[in-house]
Image 1 (cartoon, rainbow, N blue to C red):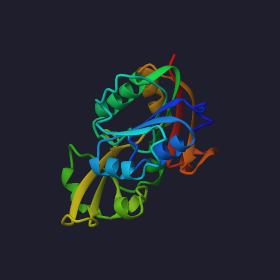
Image 2 (image 1 turned 90 degrees about the horizontal axis):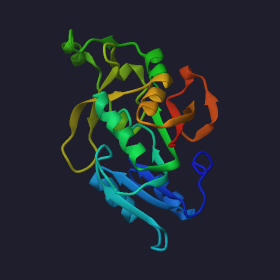
Image 3 (image 1 turned 90 degrees about the vertical axis):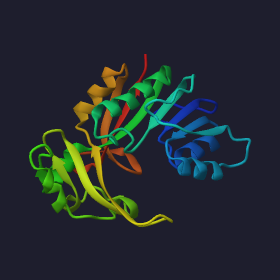
Amino acid sequence: ILKFCNLKSGNTVLDIGCGIGRHSITLAKLGLKVTGIDYLENLITCARNNCPEKTVELEFHVGDCRYINLNRTFDAVLCLYDVIGSYADEAENIKILINVAKHLKSGGIALLSVMNYGLTENLATQFFSLSKEPDKLLGLKPSNNMERTGEIFDPEYYMIDRENRVIYRREQFTEGKNLPTELIVRDRRYYRRDIEKMCRDVGLIVQWSRFIRAGDWNTNLESHNAKEILICCKKL
C-alpha cells in the first residue's frame, strides 16, 4: 500500500470497508493519518478496541460507503477485497466508486480490489437464469465457507446467473450468540476490462491493474489463476 499509493509519513488515508482495522491500524502506526469506515458497528467497535496508544492519528466511523460524506479529501483511498461487488445491483457498486473519487485529492491514488469473474467463470459448474428458472437455486448445496474459511471460489457451492453475471451461494452461519441461519448470498465479480471502465466512468485514471492473490500483490498472475484484481487509479 505504501509503495503503490506513494505514501509517506503524515499523508492522509481513507480505508473504505476497513473491517476490524487491520490495514488502518498498521498504516497509522507507520505515521499516516488514517480514517476507517465500515457499515457494521460491531466491526468498528472491534477496530476501536484494537487501536494503539492515542498518539497515533487514527479514527473510525460507522457508515455506508455509498453515501457517507466526510467533507474532506485524502491523499489515498483504499477499497480492498470485496467491498466493490458486494451488491448484486451494479448501480450500488458504482455509488461506492463515485464516493471513492469524491474523497480523493487531486493527484491522489485510489487502490481498489475486486473478485475476479474470469476465475469464477472458469471454475464454475453450475449456471442458471434467475428470471427463467428461479427454483434451480433450491438445489444449490449449502456451505459455511464464508464464515469458516472464506473460500468462496469452490464451484460446488456457487451458481452463476449468466444473464446478469451475479453469483449466488447458500451460506450457513452458526457462530455468535444468534440462532443459526441460512441465507442466499449474492455478489458481483469482474473482468478486468469492466472494472477499469467503471473507474474511468467516475473520473479516475487507471494507472495499472493486475491479477493477484492476497498477501502477494507483487506477483502478476494469469487471469485463470487469480482470485482478485488489484487496480491502481489516480485523480487528476
